[in-house]
Amino acid sequence: MPYPTDLKYTKDHEWVRVSGDTAAVGITDYAQQQLGDVVFVELPDVGSTVTAGESFGSIESVKAVSELFAPLTGEVVEVNPHLKDHPETVNSEPYNTWMVRIRLSSPAASESLLDAAAYEALVKE
Amino acid sequence: MVPFAGWDMPVEYSGISAEHMAVRTRAGLFDVSHMGQIEVAGKNAAAAVDRVVCSDASALKIGQVKYSGLLTPDGTFVDDVLVYRMAPSHFMFVANASNVKKDYAWISEQIKSVGDAAAVDSSSRYALLALQGPASREVLQPLTGVELSDIKPYWFANGEVANARATISRTGYSGEDGFEIFVPPNMAERVWQAVLESGRSAEVMPCGLGARDTLRLEAAMRLYGNDIDESTTVLEAGLDWTVAWHKTDFIGRDRLAEQRGAGVGRTLVGLEMIDRGIARHGYPLMQQDRPIGVVTSGTQTPFLKKAIAMAYAPIELAAPGTEIDVDIRGRASKARVVPLPFYKRSRK
Image (cartoon, rainbow over all chains, first blue to last red; front, top):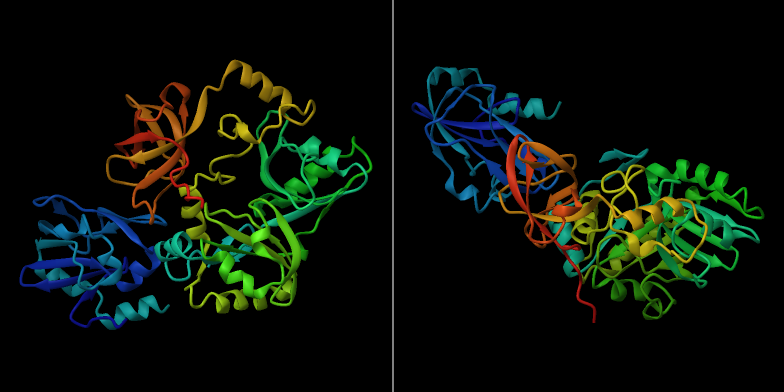
């Protein structure tokens, strides 16, 4: 699967779609392949604050449970309601399955994230 | 691929859920060549095997297989094994990969006192393929002259598969009908390809360690190192049915008889999660902030679509219907005790 160029990425295999002062966050195709069949996604409540680099939730596959790390700092303004009943969309459509939307405390901080080429290089290391 | 007891093993080929469902509804093919084989032969082989296992080896007919515990003097598990009777004075153990060396040393030492029997680690002579699932017989039959419907569950026959010398055993680790096929290692790839080819219309899938684990857990088959080990007795593990109490002398018998008289303090139970989350190996069972037991295996099952687990629980909390908290990464999550196995296939 290609690495969509309109997204930003982290070394923890999250993707970020920034629009204005909010950012949608999901996990990359590479991440879902490593996890295998996803069965639960544990997300924070709307209104809570997440901090760049810190855990904001967890994702559990049949194989294992992994933490989700916030790519940027801000307030959670929306949580994907479909993930509760359809966590498998993380596997089938990783780049269309956002987990949370964050109102960024510093929209400029997204500049420091990886672009598609840099992320692709990281995965291929 | 992951390292497993010195072998590189695939966790999954096309996804654990898809492979799991293939075995429940059609068939799946596993390479389980990592499993070890130890053979015991000699005039006193039956007596020697009877000394080291808790089931009745002497009562096995030629061609019959029995699941059994290889026990310590404490009645705990050195390993759990399948015992095959190949000939009147020739038995074969199929053992867990990580235990083969330990088992071989243990068996060799313990049968000395019986005399006229010797053990050999013959693991390198066999590759082992497991074809599991309701379509297994129709997929395998075109590849062999052995009439498969004549092999009953937990029996085996010698013959060929895809022109390779083979021992065909109607056994497995999935809770489904199926066959385990012992072939010479240099024939394994040919047989693997032939089975997949024969299974093309039935959509037989290659399956990895991941599905092997979720399948065996639904069927509540114990996994050495998770559910049983040298600290758990046969009775605690709920495997009383493997014990041939009429045998007056086998290693572990005295302690097991004592424990049977006194009753076990803890027992392996089935759990179904009520709250969200998977209770995984090592997670504690809690009662008012106090650990009272431990989860030994847990997963979200692709077929039953529930989070299930096996755990050692105090006997007073072991009755089906009892609610128990599991500490899932710091959060008390409710589970309910349910009867084992979680899944039992319907027999025609």
